[in-house]
Image 1 (tube, rainbow, N blue to C red):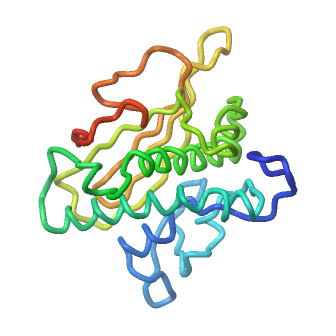
Image 2: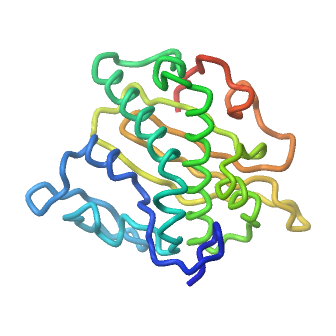
Image 3: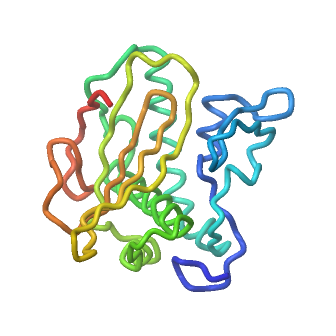
Length: 225
């Protein structure tokens, strides 16, 4: 199979849920501490390892793209995710997320890396689903480690949810009557923190809720999901 990012031979599988996120929320996943999910038919299944096939995308990428190339992207998201998780452990809710504090030092560079982490996640989700979305521009942004000016992020919270939770949604694609892409989006959740990722070439985005790394301020509002 071919890596959708660089078109080299693909043999590496990206996690749907980042391992550090799953361990942070559930602890080490094992036979003694399994997690529960549902298969494509809605049937409950038990997962006894963070390497369970259900936790991996079925569309592979190459080893370099999944490690060396995107490691700074993964590391930046891991830093931000842990910061928010620890804050939620001490505060019931947060009105604002201070990116300069969460991602210090060099927070602007790191928030670009966070966007590219979600570019990889969205691209893998689209590729796996077979959704009719051209992901060449997403791949190009990852390959050259550049901001994608059509990929928006929105941060949300659920302040009244107490069960451990970690999830990646299905990809939702909205197109016009002539099959022109309007948007493709996913939601990635780590406990009470949710990231909505929206890829669109249309000027339809609500910029009070979604932003680009090139325009984001030092703090962003965490709205209720």
